[in-house]
Length: 250
Image (cartoon, rainbow, N blue to C red):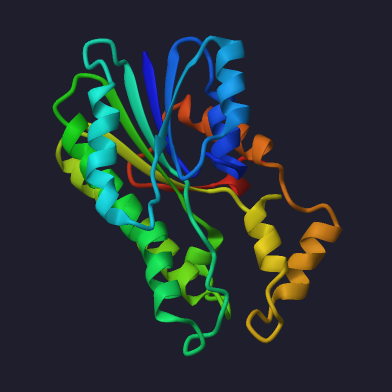
C-alpha cells in the first residue's frame, strides 16, 4: 500500500496530484480547510481510499494533532511507501515592505514555511524507523531565486523552504538516506493563485502586466499537466535534497 499526505488539495496542483494518485492500491490523506467533492467522487469511481483531514495550516498549533490522526490510520506493516507533499501556499500579501499588515506577514510565513517545516519534522519522526520508503516533496517556486517587488514574503518563504529541503537532504544523507526530501518548482500554472496575482494593484506589484501577458498568451500550464510531470519524477530515482524544476522536463 502506498500512502500520500497532500496539503492544499482543495484546488489547483494539490487537487490535480490527488486525482491522478487515486488508484486502488493508494491511500490519500488530503489536509484542507474544506472538502473536495471532486476528489471524493473520483475516489469512489476508482475504488481508492481517500481521507479528508480538516486543517487550517495557518494555525500551526493544529499540525501535531492532525499528523497524529493521519499516522494512526496508516498500517505500518502494509506500507510500501509514504509520501508527504507540501503543496499548500499563498502569495499574499502582494505589497511592498512597509505597506503590509502584521497579520498578513505572519499568515504567509506560517503557511509557506513554518507549516511545511513542522510537517516534515513530524513526518521524519514517524517514518525514520519504518521499513518502508519515505519521501517528502516541498512545492517551491522560481520566486525563491528571484527577488520580485511586492512578493517579499513569498520569495523569502520559498527560499527558506528550499534551504530547509537541502538541509534535510544533507542530514538524511548522513543517516543512509532513510527519508528522501526534494523540492519541486512547478512554474507558472493556471490556478487561483495566478488570478490573485493578476488582480493585484500596479502600485503593489510592478510586474503585473507580465503576468497578465502569461494568461492572455496561453503560457500558463494546466495543474493536470504539472501533476503528471511530478508523478513521473517520483516514479524514478530522485536525489536527496535536490531542487527540481519543471523546466528540466518540458
